[in-house]
Amino acid sequence: MKVIAAYMLAVLGGNTSPTADDVKKILGSVGAEADNDRIELLLSQMKDKDVNEIVASGREKLASVVPSGGAVAGVAPASSNAGAADTSSAEQKKEEKVEDEEEEDGDLGDIFGEGGLFGSDD
Image 1 (cartoon, rainbow, N blue to C red):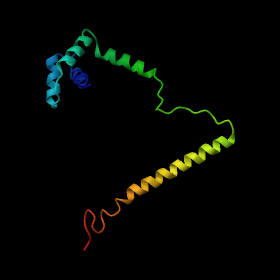
Image 2 (image 1 turned 90 degrees about the vertical axis):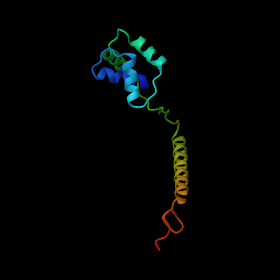
Image 3 (image 1 turned 45 degrees about the vertical axis):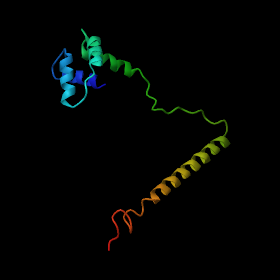
Image 4 (image 1 turned 60 degrees about the horizontal axis):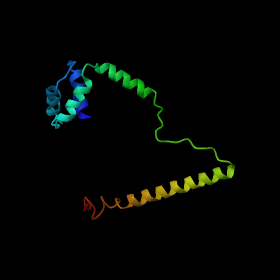
């Protein structure tokens, strides 16, 4: 990814056809290690191609992807009793999570008190 980023930076800087040395110079300027094999692979794949056209093509492909955010739509429960059971189960899990968080925070309460991180106010 860093090789592609360096290549794109060179193009944005006005170099329409960056060389391996151009990419290495950009990577070196930020202390990144240059991988010659990846640089050569990228340059061979970009030969005789316009970066702007490739980016536009990629945007079109991404636009056709339906974002899901990892959530899956559920099926409506068969009866109202099933919905009530799901709700109480969710509430119970939520209560357990809150209790767990409170227990974790309880250990930090003494940091500022006596014997804590900053000692007492005496």
